Length: 245
Image (cartoon, rainbow, N blue to C red; front, side, top):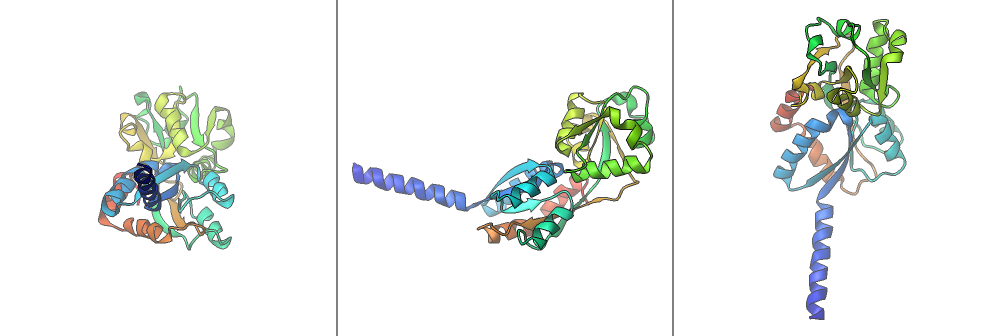
């Protein structure tokens, strides 16, 4: 009985070790959470490698990696942080995996007839407007740039509700905590997002998003396999569905 118990314990331990070895832990910028979930599921089915994501703002994830967080891959919402990790010897040469679009979204249909984001933003009845923290979230930075170009930043600060990341900014608008929010287009075209309406922000360029393999990862081959999967037709169709270029 003791031998059987020991063998069983060893088998369970070995199975857990194998399972842990066949998994990736990935830092994912909040804007990319929805398409990443679909891409991760597709990758798991094809490869048998499980994927676990930690979703937050790009700035916070970058800081976590610098402080030793055990991620295998980093999917940022910009090109700056992955390039910094590469320069600091903490990440591989970054690759562009998507180009995203910032938009202004609202759940309140009475604003949906407005012809532009500026017209919607300045409409009567707009009380609070969500935006991701421009200091840590690239989509917040891009949205703030658009407001400054339109000459609306200073006068609108009293209305702004700053979120930790663009996903939280979307949640504020979904729940009605704010009248509208600056979000990534991926949130605007989600099942929840389709209940409202949104406006493109042509004044700012698409957000170039890069990814890199974390240098300290012990699973670089699997991480490279995941990056390669992003070039597949299946992954590209998912990206297009969420309005990434």
